[in-house]
Image (cartoon, rainbow, N blue to C red):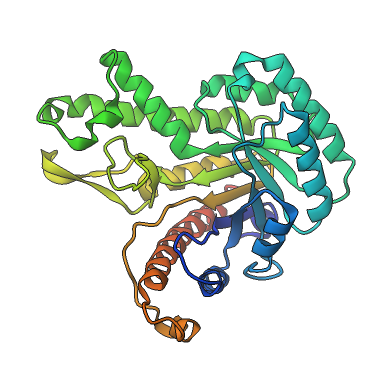
Length: 353
């Protein structure tokens, strides 16, 4: 990785305790992240909560971004005050915060822009202030999301967070519904008999999802402002999530089929390794020189992986099931982190910066 790219790019992973147990699970997480040289995106909303999570930071040099709760709405003054308080407390120690967007961005655009401007002004007066990233989360039209940031060109401490799964799945659902009014492509994950005839339209909808993601990235990069990504794969037919989601998959995942399609009984995901490489290449392409951060926001699958050299951490556990589930999830994150860093290195080698 060239110094020019290295100085403006950070790679992180979802840093959470997704299985019940004691602090040894977080110690294992810290170890695996440190081994992978991966930064951490941590969830929390209070100073005490975030301080505790920060105590498990993989290393002093590891990038850290805090993902704040869904009830943080920047149009609310109380939220703005909480964000400023957190920014003052963690200034110089973390690189950013993430909050979700809300429908007010399109339903009350002037109010939302005024609230963001007020917050930006207060954050800009804090030395070493973390950047506040507003995440595409509630499904507003991508063009409206981009226009909001275009209208806030004076923002110094606020930037966009593109969740490629959220954007891509929403666009795929819209594309499919345009061909089949009133039908949701994600409802086909049960693979009804009619799916075999609908597969060309499913494929077209997925392709449209990728196109919309790339277009949105291109629009936001023109602003030359800090940009953050939530990276994970997905597919409207994915049925693997315990939360009923169509995304938050590994870039190495496949979608099993009950029938043969194009000579296979499995589907590639929306992006896959090649799609991730396209996103990275676009994000780092000259003449853009904006700071870019990538968080792998992949959810666990519940499979198990032996603890290996980390087994002594859990010597007091009689049942290692959750520890091995956590270890498997961490292996998925680190495998995808390898893929992400490889894509960044290829950009550097090809002169993308």
